[in-house]
Length: 287
Image 1 (cartoon, rainbow, N blue to C red):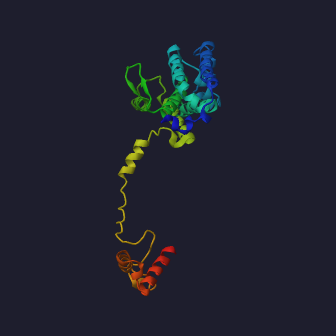
Image 2: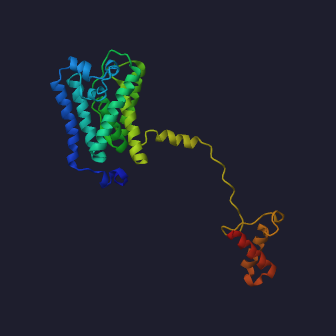
Image 3: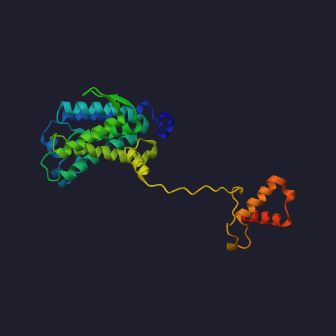
């Protein structure tokens, strides 16, 4: 049950007031969209993320680009995703960890994009990488929660949604399709969020690679189990099967014979020699 998981305990709930963090992020993105003219010099050369800007040591672009958007459709769908998934994740993580997740996903997405696009003339803008990190968090906290897609209108589990989306991003990047969309930035957000949450919550959250791990364990050859002993010795008694290996020890066959005699006639039927052997065997067991 979800309520049994550690991150759902009261110590992880921060109260309704922290939901303002999502509203604040939406407000900052909206204000930046309204107040900073798209493709102005400040927008393009100072705040958007680019290879040229990083070469010029404008390192703040790793963060500032997340609050810029190319058009209304771009910001609308990003903010809608931030609201839907952020409101589910924030009460579990709290404001501080949620912001860390958001910024880490955005920065990592930009970094992965830059590795492949070093020297590119095109800038990178948008909160998509950060939103993809929040989506991954929602899938890891609520893997079996069912959601309804808009296009196409198909219901599916959150974990399935994220895996399908990740597959589309990988296929699109490899095929070179979807120009103008930073698929690598999206994947960077996915990957960094997964690593961050696994480091924080370990096995308490959904493991994207759990199926692969289970398959590898099943494929690993198992060692044959040792045959079970049919001896009548009590648990913990240790005897030698070959008396010659230790002259002071008692063979298993001899102890079995003595135990059978006790079972049939009682302790009083034992000879002094048999009692001595039984005592010796019990001493071996205590060593």
